[in-house]
Length: 331
Image (tube, rainbow, N blue to C red; front, side, top):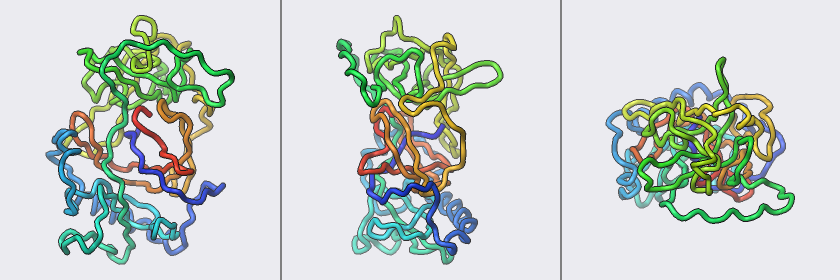
């Protein structure tokens, strides 16, 4: 499961076809772009010694120096004045986009690489998404509105469904948290709640067997009555290597406690590769239902966590449609 991060919303025309709109000449450069992406990712994104804390990274001054400013390298559509060009380009994702007049020649990113077009896009700082809050006295749940068009993902669901609130209990009792039930997974032996490592395993800091609640305790889940699963496995987040996923699974206490049907959307209808300009949708604990457009694929990015900054390879970047963000903290 990919780490949860999205770019700020950008308005673009919405099409009904889930197909790229690239020119034929652009399509012929796909293999060259992948090679260039790999080369520049290795140059600009750290592979070793990446153990600085997220707090230090967030507070570090922004600089036009590429080794500080670039947080991702991928393949996407070149934009000019926020308008689509139909040209596939090598994308440099930066914390802040500086005017060329404010940059030295040593800090300028290339306008082309071996004849391939490039594009620089400001995205800010990628960070993991989870909602945490110091403990507070649980408030009484309000009565649900009659026949809401979109169910409230923060409510209690039995069976629990992908898109709804889930989470762990902080062993030290210093905060309450909630994240999103991502999907129902299975192997030959069992069904599992699938979500992020940071949602189910606290970035790998929880022991296996830790209880998972629905709703998350931040959303008034009750530790005495709302456990639905136990942490079963997580993929560790590693410094010094390229990560692929931010992922963990938890085995339900009973299969009747979970469903594969995504809130508001229904059961999954299959899988397929992501493509630039593909329109996708999701339901998350914080923003509910949102639609978005894939703007970059095969993208390497550095993401800030509580336990450090970790670099991920081959990620997908999604921008929300209709002026909305695709997701937010807790999704």
